[in-house]
Length: 140
Ligand code: RTP
Ligand code: MG
Image 1 (cartoon, rainbow, N blue to C red):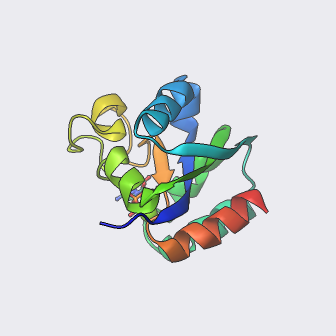
Image 2 (cartoon, rainbow, N blue to C red):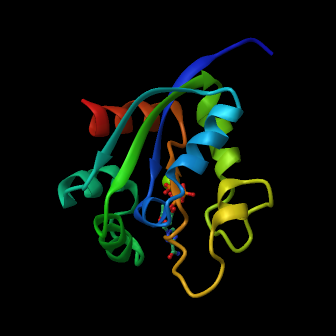
Protein backbone atom coordinates (compact mmCIF):
# COMPACT_ATOMS: atom_id res chain seq x y z
CA UNK A 1 0.00 0.00 0.00
CA UNK A 2 1.32 3.45 -0.84
CA UNK A 3 2.31 5.97 1.78
CA UNK A 4 -0.27 8.59 2.70
CA UNK A 5 1.09 11.07 5.21
CA UNK A 6 -1.71 12.67 7.19
CA UNK A 7 -2.11 14.81 10.28
CA UNK A 8 -4.63 14.15 13.03
CA UNK A 9 -5.78 15.77 16.25
CA UNK A 10 -5.24 13.76 19.41
CA UNK A 11 -6.59 15.05 22.72
CA UNK A 12 -5.53 13.66 26.06
CA UNK A 13 -8.82 14.24 27.88
CA UNK A 14 -8.97 15.60 31.48
CA UNK A 15 -8.92 12.09 32.97
CA UNK A 16 -5.71 11.24 31.11
CA UNK A 17 -3.97 14.46 32.20
CA UNK A 18 -5.20 14.09 35.81
CA UNK A 19 -3.97 10.50 35.95
CA UNK A 20 -0.51 11.53 34.66
CA UNK A 21 -0.89 9.42 31.52
CA UNK A 22 0.08 12.12 28.98
CA UNK A 23 3.62 10.78 28.67
CA UNK A 24 2.51 7.14 28.37
CA UNK A 25 0.01 8.09 25.64
CA UNK A 26 2.65 10.06 23.71
CA UNK A 27 5.09 7.17 24.15
CA UNK A 28 2.63 4.83 22.41
CA UNK A 29 2.08 7.34 19.59
CA UNK A 30 5.82 7.76 19.00
CA UNK A 31 6.52 4.02 19.37
CA UNK A 32 4.10 3.43 16.49
CA UNK A 33 6.28 5.73 14.36
CA UNK A 34 4.08 8.80 14.37
CA UNK A 35 5.62 12.26 14.87
CA UNK A 36 4.61 15.02 17.21
CA UNK A 37 4.24 18.24 15.19
CA UNK A 38 2.72 20.56 17.81
CA UNK A 39 1.47 20.33 21.39
CA UNK A 40 -0.38 22.51 23.88
CA UNK A 41 -2.01 22.34 27.29
CA UNK A 42 -5.49 23.89 27.16
CA UNK A 43 -8.22 24.66 29.66
CA UNK A 44 -10.93 24.47 27.01
CA UNK A 45 -13.73 27.02 26.78
CA UNK A 46 -17.28 25.78 26.35
CA UNK A 47 -17.50 27.38 22.88
CA UNK A 48 -14.49 25.39 21.67
CA UNK A 49 -15.92 22.15 23.05
CA UNK A 50 -19.39 22.63 21.58
CA UNK A 51 -17.79 23.26 18.18
CA UNK A 52 -15.47 20.30 18.60
CA UNK A 53 -18.35 17.95 19.46
CA UNK A 54 -20.98 19.65 17.21
CA UNK A 55 -21.92 16.28 15.66
CA UNK A 56 -23.17 15.12 19.09
CA UNK A 57 -25.27 18.19 19.95
CA UNK A 58 -28.76 17.11 21.06
CA UNK A 59 -27.67 13.62 22.15
CA UNK A 60 -28.28 12.70 25.82
CA UNK A 61 -24.58 12.44 26.61
CA UNK A 62 -23.69 15.83 25.07
CA UNK A 63 -24.10 17.89 28.29
CA UNK A 64 -22.14 15.49 30.54
CA UNK A 65 -19.48 15.13 27.82
CA UNK A 66 -18.89 18.89 27.56
CA UNK A 67 -18.90 19.22 31.37
CA UNK A 68 -16.31 16.47 31.64
CA UNK A 69 -14.13 18.05 28.96
CA UNK A 70 -14.29 21.36 30.89
CA UNK A 71 -13.38 19.71 34.18
CA UNK A 72 -9.61 20.11 33.83
CA UNK A 73 -6.78 20.72 31.41
CA UNK A 74 -6.52 18.85 28.11
CA UNK A 75 -3.33 18.19 26.16
CA UNK A 76 -3.73 18.62 22.41
CA UNK A 77 -1.29 16.92 20.03
CA UNK A 78 -0.92 17.55 16.30
CA UNK A 79 0.39 14.21 15.09
CA UNK A 80 1.70 13.27 11.64
CA UNK A 81 2.24 9.88 10.09
CA UNK A 82 1.35 7.37 7.43
CA UNK A 83 -2.44 6.86 7.58
CA UNK A 84 -2.36 8.26 11.11
CA UNK A 85 -6.05 9.20 11.23
CA UNK A 86 -7.28 5.62 11.06
CA UNK A 87 -4.10 4.32 12.70
CA UNK A 88 -4.50 6.39 15.83
CA UNK A 89 -8.16 5.35 16.15
CA UNK A 90 -7.02 1.74 16.26
CA UNK A 91 -4.24 2.61 18.74
CA UNK A 92 -6.90 4.27 20.96
CA UNK A 93 -9.36 1.37 20.89
CA UNK A 94 -13.13 1.46 20.85
CA UNK A 95 -15.09 4.16 22.69
CA UNK A 96 -16.00 2.20 25.83
CA UNK A 97 -12.85 1.26 27.79
CA UNK A 98 -14.69 -1.72 29.35
CA UNK A 99 -14.64 -3.58 26.06
CA UNK A 100 -11.74 -1.88 24.23
CA UNK A 101 -9.15 -4.44 23.11
CA UNK A 102 -6.06 -5.15 25.22
CA UNK A 103 -3.05 -3.45 23.64
CA UNK A 104 -5.02 -0.26 22.98
CA UNK A 105 -4.78 2.94 25.02
CA UNK A 106 -8.37 2.66 26.23
CA UNK A 107 -8.18 -1.11 26.68
CA UNK A 108 -4.97 -1.05 28.71
CA UNK A 109 -5.29 2.21 30.64
CA UNK A 110 -9.02 2.98 30.76
CA UNK A 111 -10.84 2.34 33.99
CA UNK A 112 -13.76 0.02 33.36
CA UNK A 113 -15.64 0.50 36.59
CA UNK A 114 -17.01 3.40 38.60
CA UNK A 115 -16.55 6.02 35.92
CA UNK A 116 -18.68 7.22 33.01
CA UNK A 117 -17.90 6.12 29.44
CA UNK A 118 -16.81 9.63 28.50
CA UNK A 119 -13.74 9.15 30.68
CA UNK A 120 -11.92 7.28 27.96
CA UNK A 121 -8.59 9.11 28.03
CA UNK A 122 -8.21 10.21 24.43
CA UNK A 123 -9.89 11.67 21.38
CA UNK A 124 -8.73 11.10 17.82
CA UNK A 125 -10.15 12.63 14.64
CA UNK A 126 -12.28 10.10 12.73
CA UNK A 127 -11.78 11.22 9.09
CA UNK A 128 -9.63 13.55 6.99
CA UNK A 129 -12.46 16.12 7.06
CA UNK A 130 -12.74 15.93 10.86
CA UNK A 131 -8.95 16.16 11.23
CA UNK A 132 -8.76 19.34 9.14
CA UNK A 133 -11.70 20.92 10.97
CA UNK A 134 -10.48 19.94 14.45
CA UNK A 135 -6.83 20.93 13.88
CA UNK A 136 -8.04 24.37 12.78
CA UNK A 137 -10.17 24.65 15.93
CA UNK A 138 -7.47 23.63 18.41
CA UNK A 139 -4.31 24.98 16.78
CA UNK A 140 -5.15 28.01 14.58
P1 RTP B 1 -13.92 10.72 20.49
O1 RTP B 1 -14.79 11.49 19.51
O2 RTP B 1 -13.82 11.41 21.83
O3 RTP B 1 -12.57 10.41 19.90
O4 RTP B 1 -14.57 9.30 20.79
P2 RTP B 1 -15.26 8.29 19.80
O5 RTP B 1 -15.17 8.80 18.40
O6 RTP B 1 -14.74 6.95 20.12
O7 RTP B 1 -16.76 8.36 20.29
P3 RTP B 1 -17.95 9.32 19.82
O8 RTP B 1 -19.08 8.47 19.43
O9 RTP B 1 -17.47 10.38 18.88
O10 RTP B 1 -18.35 10.00 21.20
C1 RTP B 1 -17.60 11.10 21.66
C2 RTP B 1 -17.34 10.94 23.14
O11 RTP B 1 -18.57 11.06 23.83
C3 RTP B 1 -18.56 10.21 24.97
N1 RTP B 1 -19.68 9.32 24.87
N2 RTP B 1 -20.49 9.09 25.86
N3 RTP B 1 -23.32 6.86 25.71
C4 RTP B 1 -22.50 7.71 26.26
O12 RTP B 1 -22.62 8.07 27.41
C5 RTP B 1 -21.41 8.21 25.43
N4 RTP B 1 -21.19 7.92 24.17
C6 RTP B 1 -20.09 8.63 23.81
C7 RTP B 1 -17.21 9.51 24.97
O13 RTP B 1 -16.30 10.29 25.73
C8 RTP B 1 -16.81 9.56 23.54
O14 RTP B 1 -15.42 9.46 23.43
MG1 MG C 1 -15.76 10.78 17.80
